[in-house]
Length: 161
Image (spheres, rainbow, N blue to C red):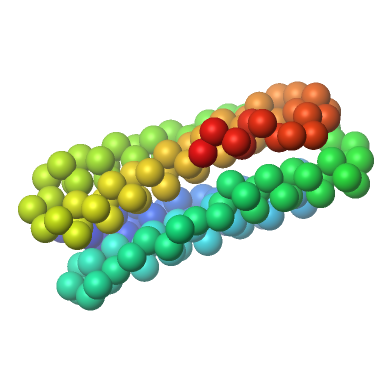
């Protein structure tokens, strides 16, 4: 299997995992965020498929963190009573592990790529996976203590990227 097929398979698996997390999410807001993550993984797969075919590909500038911030703001505005089981955290940590592995994979492939455009795209994809990891970190923090996390009106949690 070549690196492009391997990357597309990893992206498809990540997309499917996020779709499943969305289906099982204990909250509509989190379901929305997991669908956003799934959509991003789908987009990454399309970029890699274009690279494999030799078609010029670009990674669109993502608004994932901005959209996630909006979802959290709506959750706060609704004043939802949020109570998550601790079992959710293990699922989200698994997603973090997937993102970490993807980031490492793309960083490695960027180092190995001889084509400058491919190298650039792999670096961008690694950065996107890093953002996903960061968002999951915030979701884990949120699930661990939802009320205090939502009470922060500035959502400084998502400002780092």
